[in-house]
Length: 65
Image (cartoon, rainbow, N blue to C red; front, side):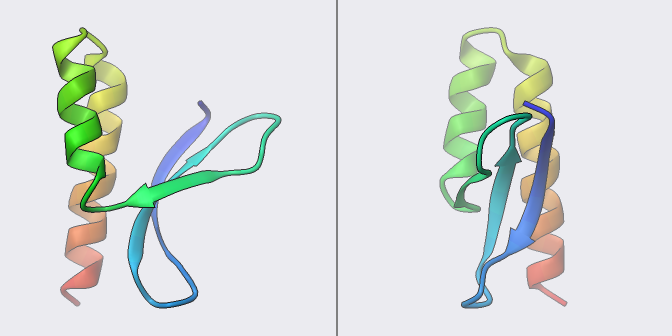
């Protein structure tokens, strides 16, 4: 995974986008992402989970502006 970042879809909803080197980006709702991060923490993928947590915090902050 190259980049994990918050983004707003065409409907104005904040989501978390996962960009890969060769594939189309994948996105999940900012509401689903914390659950994914928790699961990743449980299996020891703390660095990836931390990036998701950071993106969720940013999406939440941007959504409140």
